Structures are given as C-alpha cells and as structure tokens.
Image (tube, rainbow, N blue to C red; front, side, top):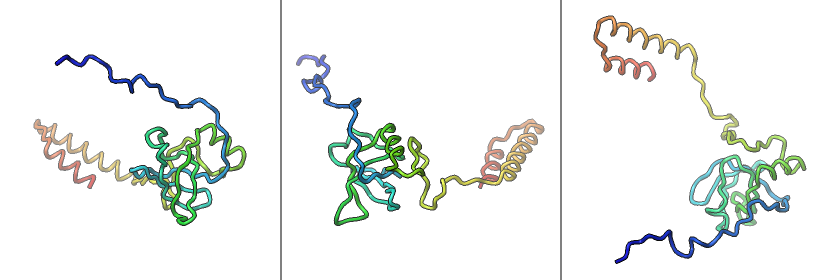
Length: 167
C-alpha cells in the first residue's frame, strides 16, 4: 500500500464563507451579559431587566462564534418559559460600546471585563488578615533558623510546620 503523503482531502481546500469584518446592522431587542458558561451549548446570562436566564446557543453559532463570560449577547425570549432564552448573536466590543452610547445598555454594564459580580453582589475574593500571614511567615523563618543552626536541615519538620500554620 502507498504511503499517505497528502494534506487531506477536498474538504481542506474549501474556504470558509465567514463575513468576519463586515459591518452589520444593530438589533435593539433583548440584550444580556454572560455570567458563566455551563457547557453543552448552554450559559447563564444576566438580563438587563434584572432576571437571570439559562440560555441555549443556537446551532449555527456553535463552534463558530466563541462566547466568553462578560460578553454582551442578543437573546430571543421564550413565550412559554420566562427563565430560559436562546442566543441569537454575540455583539462585538465595538457594537456593545455603540449600544451603550445609544442608551440600550445601562451605564452599569461592563464591556470587555470578565469580573462579573457573584450572586451576593460581591466580586468574589476573600481577604485574610495581614497580621496572621506575617506571623505565619515569621514562624517559618524561625523554624528555618533553628534547623540551620543545628547543622541539619529537616525538610519534613519544616513542611509540617508550614502545613500546620496555614491550616
């Protein structure tokens, strides 16, 4: 049998009919902001009317248009299910800015930012007390000094002390 030296079949030579740089008309309907991706073509979005909806990415957009958290999307609301919607289009950052300038998006909408607030309305991080971190670091340094003064570096004891101080 001959060795395969080719680069693929005729499907490789076909070009994509994608209109990436083409300007399109803005649709003023129901805009949402993506909170998080759920997988399997679904996402959780926050509508600007104050409702969180489970959205389904339509088949034409799957694997062609990549949606990330924080993106502004156009959705089609379902008549029979208010808590669910279908994603029709994804706005580019330029289109989202023009929507915000025309007053379609509220002033609180964040464009090009992925740090969307959590359910509690807080931004997610938890801050620890600085003094406790400094005390833990001093204990680790003291343990190192004692081990080095003895002439034997005991890595196991040092590791145990570090684990205990951070637990």
